[in-house]
Length: 142
Image (cartoon, rainbow, N blue to C red; front, side):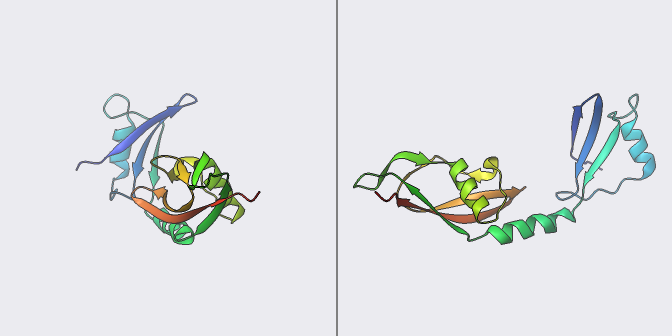
């Protein structure tokens, strides 16, 4: 049986982390003890399992944010080009105002937005799960 895992360490402890969302984990307590053994196995203080039940939470987050539209005002010239740009920080702030908690690293932008109009932006939720939102960049009044 071949299982993928990540070994992490911090504060004097080390952990083996299995992603139960992407693969089925069925190890006996004897196999887990051998895995944790520093002389015969990988060696670790703790073994952590991210369970597939969490996937329902991730899907709920994706469903909640899918299709959300946020409007961001920015200074632009008469051709619609922005004097600056709209980046992940501004998108996250607008989403937070709308009640969605997203981190900047979850916003998938190939490059900052530099023109007025509607832009489709992917929000990475977990693994291969993304949600699409629409960012509408409008000209700042005045």
